Amino acid sequence: MHIEPGIVAGPKMALAYGTAAAAAAYTVKLTIDDLKTHSLGSFLVRTVIAAIGVFISFEVLPHFPVGISEVHFILGTTLFLILGAAPTAIGLAAGLLVQGMFFAPTDLPMYFVNVSTLLWPLFAIDVVAKRVIPATTAYVDLKYLDVLKLSLAYQGGVVAWVAFWAFYGQGSGAENLGSIASFGAVYMMVVLIEPLVDLAALALAKALRPTSHSPLVTRRLYQA
Image (spheres, rainbow, N blue to C red):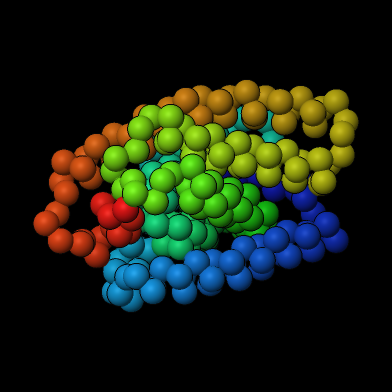
């Protein structure tokens, strides 16, 4: 997901700097929480896995421009369920930065806009998960409706942030509204497909359930 360069520009970028800085601060909080139950080595390994997964989502999996942005299979909920919130947040930011630095330098001026758009919906599903998933349920035991709720929250959050930046940067003209509508409509395809990917990943994780905790995944994947 990349909002097109120029959608937000000039003094208006100050808001993007602020939302990205707040996201960074919240990521630090999530990291501290994660390190209470995981080793530093596990955290670093999961973060690297997340960054690689994000890069594959951006550069290898199908993606195409629609309206004001690009449609990607970000797999945000998949990474969240398997790796945890903090490694996924850092992975999203790192994967986006690597892509901008080496493969799509024209996206770099919009980095703080894009990173805010990806991270805040992730923080939202972390909150949603705590509310809708019983504390006695491990992630590998989630049902389709549970995963769908998380995916809708994440993908809906991404669409909402894209729309916000478009309105904020370009106003409410007919052309801008049309671009937003086009992006939102096509993005519904992602909303339909990603819960199935999530369930497939959880089914694989359940089949590979280790006898003890693996440092490659978040503890909540297997432990309630």
